[in-house]
Image: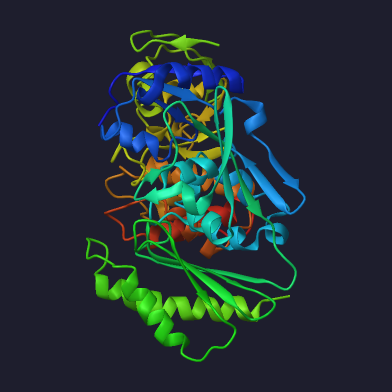
Length: 275
Length: 168
């Protein structure tokens, strides 16, 4: 339970980090908070030749509001976002979800972008990013690109991130007038991985979107019209469509049942809290 | 920018319980192992080594974190407190004393981590209610006590620290 040896680069600015990643290619990994990567190093599920530490790069440590987008740098810790004074007003869905992200001891180190890069199917922050239609900004030495969250998450712990590339920030659309947001989760113990996590967004015209994590390999979305006729049937079809599997935490049947019930409750809550 | 090759062992300079230290650590060494094996501060215990059990919890710049999920090199320049910082000489801290009085430990393996989480909690939220205490404790596994005595001890310590009645 100790990491295999690796070289370590404590980058002090972005160009140093990008150079080290370019040089290291597919054997180099970014480390920020390390709350997902270090367990993988300890269990030797990951054996990078080089780790590039980006936590001391000041330009990556900022939360900025630009128009209707909230931009969160790659070194911003989950606890920092949790205590960001504008969180409840600008990102109510993230506000509702963030206390479910691991335990407080993990949020004190873990970063928002690190959770996105890790892309665990049951993780709350990738779920929120996808539900809100956010984007991921990726940099390599001579190229910057922005990818929609729905294209970034490709499978279980699998993303569009290429060798030599790193996430520099994620951009999340801020709260829109007249829209309601709700988040609910069921886990064995507070702070454990979600068995099912639901994010619901209800728009002024009564239409809504449910995004579900913890069941399929990536969070999945269901769009629903304002007319609630047949809603339970739509939820039931969606629950089956997610192709839940039995595992040590829950049976597929229990997960489908949670998608139906928790999905309905979360949608109801989002519809009722529109302002 | 320093690039450390895997065999280098440069000094990590940080403050441990108010004292400047500079032990040597290769890049792959975990903070938990640096504390225990290089410095000999064995109050911090190591359980699961993947962030689940909470036994290795220490305070980094005032916030409770897992020492097993932090590279020793990442401690450069940090202010770190471990369970050794709590007692003043032979005198247990109010939190430690409450744990003893309420039988909030049996084997003691998880205790150091729990104490560091609660110490940080009461420093930032002296009025923390039972729900907040339980949420903070959710990051720790204890297989002896069933948690009830730990919650009792935490409530008693909170009251004592803020000068109220001793028992919750």
